[in-house]
Image 1: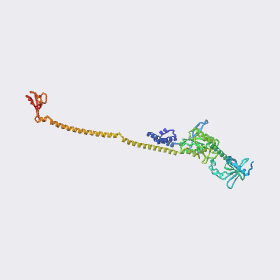
Image 2: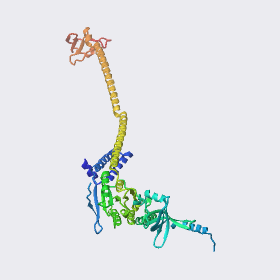
Image 3: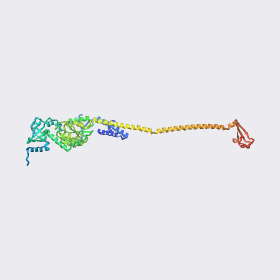
Image 4: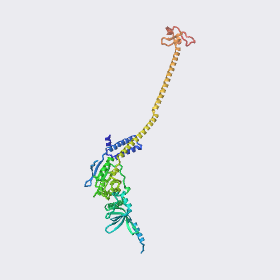
Amino acid sequence: MATQEQAEFAGLTFEEAFERLEQAVSALDTGDLSLDEALAHFEEGMKLARYCGRLLDNAELRVQQLLADNTGLLTLAPFESEP
Amino acid sequence: MQLLQVSQLTRYLKEVLESDPLLQDVWVQGEVSNSTQSAAGHQYFTLKDETAQLRCVLFRRVSAARSNRASLFAPLSAPPPLVLRDGMAVLARGRLALYENRGTYELIVEEIEEAGVGLLHLRFEQLKQRLEAEGLFDEGRKRPLPRWPAVVGIVTSPQAAALRDMLRVLRTRCPLVQVILAPTLVQGEGAASQIAVAIDRLNAHGAAEVIIVARGGGSVEELWAFNEEEVARAIYRSRLPVITGVGHETDFTIADFVADYRASTPTAAAAAAVPDAAEWRRSVADAEERLAELIEGRLELLRGQLSGQRRDLIRSSPLARLVQARQQIDEATRTLSERLDHLLVMRRERLRGAVLHLNSLSPLLTIARGYAVVRREADGQTVTSVRQVEAGDELDIQLRDGHIRSVAWQLEEEQNGDAGAG
């Protein structure tokens, strides 16, 4: 289940996922949906909620530093920050 | 030519002096001499340079206020009262006033700083005025901070305690965010341009959604880079909203004025940049609850509709008509079979009647009473008239208990009997 959601929403940021969650809520709220549509929104919403929860649970602050070479090209490099 | 009284001339001078905007708010640099303090606590001194002197007075309320004001200018926020000593190089800001009775003029000092710090202060004020006039501080251009940034850019020194503090806050508050550090010097030679470059780079790179420009507390000189025009301009042209967190609570820098949001310290800036994850969890839980409520309500509604429809359906069902039809058929069948039975009984009755009647008509009964049936032997024809018989015909005479075979030997027809038995 978890992996299925991860796959389904892979790459969604928390904000994007939450936005879709809110959309599902407001879609349900309008009420002029067929039952199938309503259930689809409900299911997607619940999955998104779980996905959001999991994002929060598994989150680990990632720190990188932005470096420029002498041509001005910008690259991200890992940055060691002691917790 | 006009002749003036001394007082008229002095009055005129006073008006000229005190209506001149430049002379009413002016910074003067010089060296303190002849400093004295009055019993009331006012300080009188002379500012001088190589060729000129200026009488000054620093009223007690000003020097007292100076010691506890929450200054816009960082480290001067709570300095000890400046003790003026002869020979001290200072910058004084104030207005010129003329005393008619003595015919002297004085600088009434509103602010005074030692020259080094004072010069910085002066530059600060000048730059602040200029940028403000240019619109860099306009409230209208301040952008809202993103509600939930996925990536936060930080412009600060990688070695600084301020960075560790900010990362700690971010980790606790919202570990979902990704941090991109644009490392820079935050004090000393070149710091200002490095800070500006770091802000530009975060904008050019584009992943960050908000930028924190921060530095921990320090002296006015240490924080000075954040008062440089270069930094102000970089913040101003930043496409991404900028949060400043420089120094302590009471430190205000030019960068703070330009920033979209000014936080009092680096940790406050980090906290302002991201929401509290607890709040996110709450939002998610709220949304989840709302979803469940809505679908439950929806289903409840449908259930209601369904049972209503079921009732309607049952009411208008063809099944009911079918049952009714079957009853009608049953009834009809019953009626039919009753009638049939009745008919049969009637027939049987009639049959019996007929049989009885038939019996009563049977010739056998007649025979039994002594009559006979005569048939022609030749063809079995019943003989009821003598004309059917010729002499010599063989006849069968049937009686109650048998037959007599006989021959007609003489025929006698009666004149008026045409159908009598022979």
